[in-house]
Every structure is written in structure tokens, then in C-alpha cells.
Length: 289
Ligand code: CU1
Ligand code: CU1
Image (tube, rainbow, N blue to C red):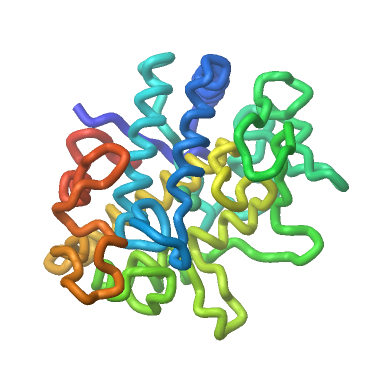
């Protein structure tokens, strides 16, 4: 029986409590910080050498899908009833709405140090020290809406523009793609317009603080955001039944600059060794409500 991932705003008080407790428990055991380390290790960009398994490439979606499944399994070892809820940022759009409540992720960071001071992940609670990161901050930070240089969350229209593209991804399979569902959702911009950050990336910008960059897993908001991103892949497949396959189907040929830099449909994706094909249909594992 597939389990259900729910809208964070629809969780009961008990479900919120159990989700938070499971997170705090895997943090206490040191398991959570391994997820932060892994994500940081896979933060390879276009301009660097090597395979881009997690970001700026077609396997952005299957990589994060598998990453979420691992986190969820770790939470379920603590409490089998827990699943990762999703944050629908097209609906919950203010700095005080879901998931920024004291019984879920806590609120915005304070000025001037952006420290989160409310909810279960506030530093003063003592349960959420930041140990792995690109800076040496020890507390969780947020800058919801980016106070000094305001940015808005992507809208339903922005998301629909990505979902409307019937091609999964296109050559050169990187952050410069202007067509293809994957980059329209992942959200790297061309720098030619006033909206350089779209959908997925724009949400990371909007949350700010710890959610920026390779150590963004330090904010548990990461999982709620990525569950919603993951849901979009399923929605897109449903909408474009015939063409809704992961691309590239085969690895780029000799002489192609992207050879060895992207994961094709049947190639193994590190660190797990699973293929994108194996992650295209997860209806036997979970579904979204
Ligand atoms: Cu990521
Ligand atoms: Cu992300």
C-alpha cells in the first residue's frame, strides 16, 4: 500500500507533532547532518567539472526524489506514521502562513542576524545546531521574502508555465536551457530578464538564510519545498501522457560537451546507483493527497 504525502497545511496537530519529533530525533542521532553533507557534496554547477547529478541537469528531479525517499525512510525508522508533507507555495504565500508556524517549522529570522527564534528549530531550544555548512553560523537563519530586497514567491501562473512544456529537458541539459520542463521548474534564468530565479530556485531565494546554497538542507523547509517540486513531476507526467518521459533517453554522443556530465534515462545515478527510469513511477511507494 502506497503511503500518502499531505499538504502541510492539512496536517492534524498530532501529525505536525510527530513529523517535527522525528526530525529532531534523527538530528539528535547525527543522521540528519549526513543528509546535509550529501547534498553539499553533490552541489556541482555548470562551470565545474564532472557529472551534474543533483542540480543544473535533467536528473535534478530523480535525484531529489530519491533523496527525499531516504529522508522519509530515516524518519519512518523513528515513527512509521510519518511522511514528508509538502508546502504549496502557490497558496501559502505569507511569512506567517504554513509552514512558518510554531508547531511546524517556526517563523522568520529576526533582524539583524536572521536567527530563527520561534518554533522547534530555534537555536535557543537546543535541538537544531547547524554543524555542516558553507558558513560557520551555528543557528538556523531565514529571511522570508528577503526584507532588504523583496522578492515574491512564484505564482501558480509561473508554475503552470513550466508544467505546460511537453518536453522533459533539452540539450545542452544545463542551467542555460530556456525550454524543457526540468529547467523551467528548477528555475535557472538566463540573466536577460528581470526574473532570473524561477519556481524552485526562486523559493530558495525567498526563504533565504540557510536555504541559500549547498547547505540548504539545514532548513527542514528544504523537504517541504522539494516534496512540492516532486509533486510537479507527477503532475507533469499526468498532463503529457504520451511525451512524458525522462530525457535524455541515451547518453550524449562522443564530441558532445555534455558527455559524462548528465545522467541518461538508464544510467546509474550516484550515490545510489539507481536510474532515472526506476524513479519515473513511484506510485507503488507513495502518492500525494
Ligand atoms: Cu538540491
Ligand atoms: Cu532545492
